[in-house]
Image (cartoon, rainbow, N blue to C red):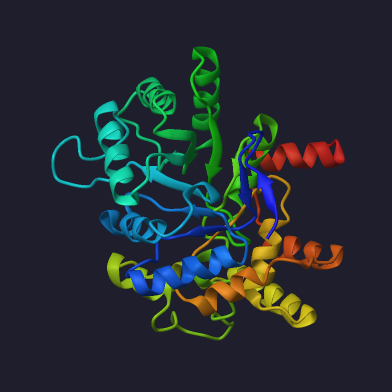
Length: 334
């Protein structure tokens, strides 16, 4: 597995990042972690919100028998971990308490990449950024990043950090895959311009791009991630996702997979990995078998024609002003 710089920093990370949201027990999770590092993976992402800290704890128990300096460990802060008023969000009080709790669960003296999990509209961004800067200066955190923010929120944060001399966000973790390309409108161009690394979550579209979903199906597969989400949330996932636009992308992915002799998941991951702004997609295998399939994205390339067909199948109408700007720039006329 190749190593890439995270944005404009000197930090080197593997071209795939292992996400730990699906970790539920030590035995299966540790097998996946072992397989990932044996394949050359060095970049691991978790969050305090995942299973209310248990994901961090599982990773921490695995770290005890590893050389810590060989790995880049990322986690996130924001999740509500209790019922007290300050048990969530991005206030100074919560962030300082949260980083200490994450360090204890991970069993490490520092976190390589500490990310705000989502924008907190109730806390001044100055308070959050100055707190993150303090954590870097104290040696508890090496780099800071953001997730699930708008382009204007990211731009504001970068500009403010630069003006105040605080540690800036060096990494963004957005939703991005062949079914959800909204990040291309503003977030990815901004990251490319400002040298911010991009580590997309859900590059396989919540399982819809793995080959499990086929045109003609009438419900989510039993035991799938979407089935569990539907049960937990009460939302009718199938009605929201099983559209002609979705099936057009799925059909294209399956066609390229057949041509290349690769799996659908490998094709979908390869497309994300090939995007210019992307540093490392976050994979989330629950089993070693899924890990092996995901790691199979390494060492081959899509042809220009295959990439173009995937891009065309996944293209969506964009809203104003993006549509108007694109039309005028392409054709010079209304």
